[in-house]
Image (cartoon, rainbow, N blue to C red; front, side, top):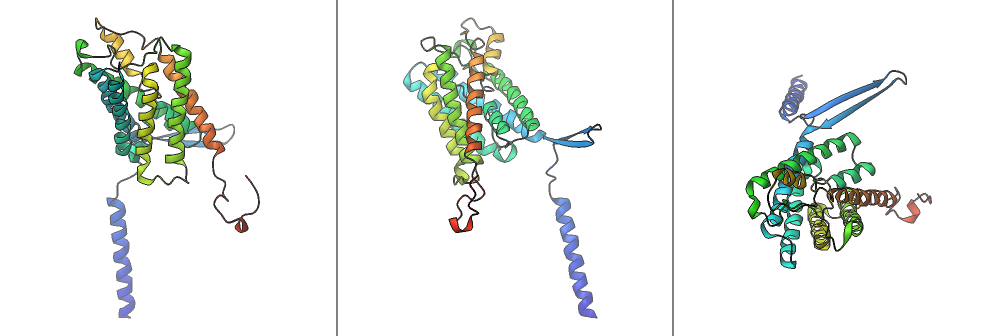
Length: 295
């Protein structure tokens, strides 16, 4: 009767409202490129989805990171303890702020070594990792170009836009080992604080990562200017070399391999450790509830 008619009208109205909300909601796949490959011999079909918005966020964040971190080095230098503390703080706080800003867009890597580690550890698809890496490299070049426009040749205290140069008193071998250790620290913090399901960091994830970058710079600045981030070390030496300043400080291009090999090795070690420390499905359960199997 009339009551049944009223109930039907209520459900029809709810359906219309639900459809309206669905149409008004933003499409989470907007800004993504879809690739499909079909292997007819094996009758297998694979689909890849690239998040272009995430890549763009990584490019912008990397450009800002280079401008703020390397900009502090250009303005203050890094030849004494006071200046190094300022530069280390600038790099650490830049990562902290930018990670908070773009984590919901791209994961907030802002570091090719972090991206590499997450791909190796299975936390990020390889094709999205390639997208992140390419965009980070472009962002590093963009940031270095903007930095060159801000600091004229005579005002750059580093003489090379804050490029990483190995201190001759330490040598490339010691610098390489230092980069492995510093990057291992950073990537381990990322894995155990930001990725691990057992982490209790909550909204403080970016703070932990930022302070990891800060203490790594305190450690490595006297040795090689501290990279722990191969994509950050990519743009400044290239732009500084082609800028051709009379007071250009050489070494950034010659030592760049250290800033790539060391961080990538450290990132790989951190990924391996993360796989080893991956919690079992029975972790944290009372012994009486577990099956007794140890994974």
